[in-house]
Length: 281
Image (cartoon, rainbow, N blue to C red):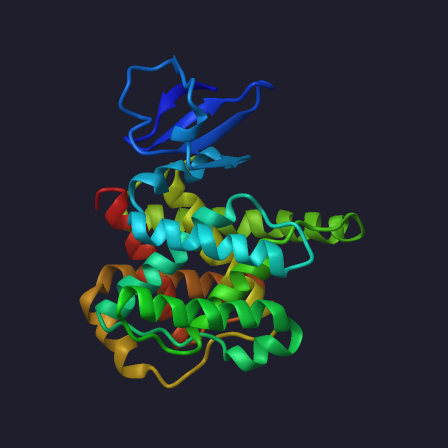
């Protein structure tokens, strides 16, 4: 196996014997000068194929313990679920779990859809979500809202590859989503005064969260709980971001005829703020 690019000390982009590109994990494989040949494959602990390059920045951001926990969780999910999972799931779910842990440690709780409601349609995914929450609490010594399981379960649901019979519907939805994504990200850029790289991981992460938000709204599962105190607190702490989110809400109302609840706006404030921080605001 040939190492062609270092990502960090333990991750590298490699090419296997059949000429396929992959991400390899192994202690210290990023140390030697690249390119070089790995002659002893025992130094490689895991390989990941078909990872979108936009997500590679996560390998330098995610806590290693969270990453390894998620890898094992996805392995379990692949044995439990009867469909193929998107290869990017290991990174996007690790990011979701990392953010969940970060919020819990800062006592920022965002009410998620009720796990028992999601389990009515997706019992296996719901079971995995509940299992993940228990394991996160045990391994990271934190307490989580039990409904965090629904966010993890939804990650598995959304990581399914579309079947051929559903492809036309998926394409029509994607065309509409692309328009909404670009419109809302342009509002952020115009109001906050930053330029967001469309090929960056920051953009991909915002895109994922917006997709989940729109799916909840389209299925009448929008977040709407009594979290007014936290919402008002965040509005005061991130006033400029909150005003930007108000404009996004206005855009949804004028163009798409729906409005965001305070809970959805609270969640959006958190994610828009993450974009702004990482883009150097």
